[in-house]
Image 1 (cartoon, one colour):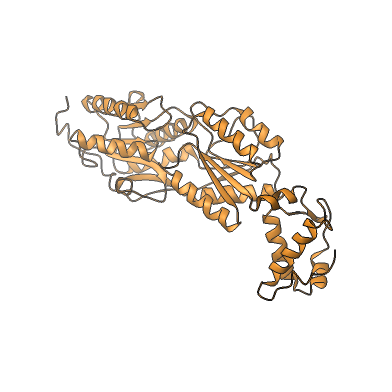
Image 2: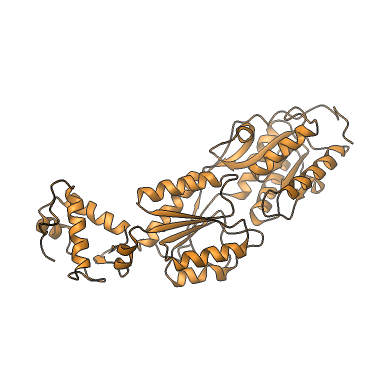
Length: 383
C-alpha cells in the first residue's frame, strides 16, 4: 500500500479522516482488494506519519462501515463485501416490531435509533401488526435490501416459525431477538423475566393488603403465561389468591375496539361477583389504560375501590400512562443492547448462532392507581 496521496492530504480534514479516505481510494482504485490484509497499526502510523491512536480511529470507522474486518490473532482485512458497503453508503439496521406507537415500543425504537446513529447506521422500522404473514413479507424485503442486521420482536399469536429466520442466517444477516426467541433458531436474545414481571406486580399488591385479584391479557402468549404464573406465585406467598375464574384472556394480537368490548363485558361480570377482586393486573400498559377508562365509565374509583397495575416501558408518556402504576423495563436500553449485539456479529466478534441472553432489570413505577385493598363492599351497585 502506498503513502497518502496529495488528494487525501487536506489540512481542513482531521487526520483520521484523511487516512480513512486514503484507504477507501486504495480500494476503489484496485490497489486493495476484498480479502487483502492491511498493514499493522504501527506500520500504518509510520507510513501515514500519524499517531497510532489516529490510525485506530480511522480503522474503527471503516470497521463500523463494514469496509474492513478484524480477526483476533490474525490481523485486519478488507471485508469481502466492502465494495457493496461503499456503494450503499451506510449500513442499515432494521427493527421489526409488532407495533410502533403503543406500550414500550416507542422507547424501544428510541434506544435503537440512538445506538445506531452513534455507529453511523441508518435504521428501518417495520410494523408487523403482530401478524406472522406481514412479518414474513417484511423480513423478505429486508433480506433483499441486504441489511446489515435485524432486531426482531417475534410475533406471538401465532408464533413466528423458524423458516422465516433461517434464510437470514444463510445469507449471513445477523439477527437479535427481543423479548422472546423463535423456537429452533439459535441467536442472541435481549429480554426480561416474564415470571419476575408477574412477581413484582403480585408483591406490590400483596404488600398493600390485596388478597383477591384478577389478571387480564390480550391473548395467552408465552410471556403472558409467565406473567400469570409469577403473579399467582407472588399472591400465594403474600397470603392471597388469583382464582382461575379471575384470569381473563382474549384471542386478539393487539388492543382493538373488539378487545375493548371484551374488557367491558369481563369487568362488568367481575364487578357483579360476590367476592369481586380488589385489584387487577394487566399484561400490557395499553390494556391497563383501557381498563382504567372503563372502570371510570362504570363508576368504579381507582384505586379507591379497585387498584390497577400494568406493565410497560420505564419512559412514561401520555396522561393516562403517567398515572398508571406499572412494572417497568428500560426498553431504550433493550434497543441499545440489540444494536450492540448486531454490530458485534456484523464485525465477526460474535457468531450469528450465539445463544447468549441479556436479561434486563425491572422496576415499579410511581403511579396513582395502586392503593391499599378497599374495605368497601360494593359501594355502588353494578347491574
